[in-house]
Image 1 (cartoon, rainbow over the protein chains, first blue to last red):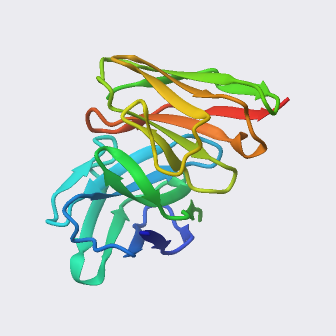
Image 2 (cartoon, rainbow over the protein chains, first blue to last red; image 1 turned 180 degrees about the vertical axis):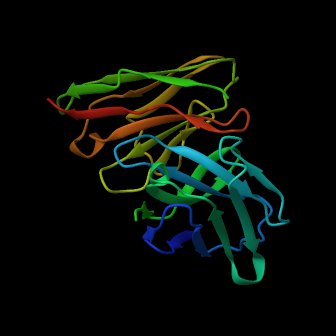
Length: 118
Length: 107
């Protein structure tokens, strides 16, 4: 049973960079059957796909965020990460990492709330 | 981007009721449609993928149907643990997009 766990600061100042890590256990991130994704959910709102990464390093981003986002993968550590630059209070959200199989997100981390606040 | 429109946005029902939630895509997406359940304070969980395939372990009272642009999620004989928010998501093309959700609460 795969498990995903997000980690990172819960508070980020405006204009700074939000950095999160997702640790994967119970499955190898090198498994070519999956992509690994970041999804966010502002408080009380819906879900927004941020982007996905393959074990090879290939990435796909939401065009609405692409200019500010980098997703990378460290296969030797079974983890992948998210960097979001120049954040504003509108970026306050619960950030989830997830495993994507055949287009659906079949396993999720518990989520981590990141608040952009000075 | 493919817009996903869910209806209703909220729904009140009783234990034992049958409910249907609909999801409409802004363009045809074949059967690349997934349904998630999210309980308060928890991460979403995948319930149905490929429009109608029940994920292993999901109770058979859940079912999905549709193709093209119109889809539905039906729950027969609602149980207390089913009261949650449900989201549809298209996986036809990036950026993957979700509906705004349907909150199902107890009448």
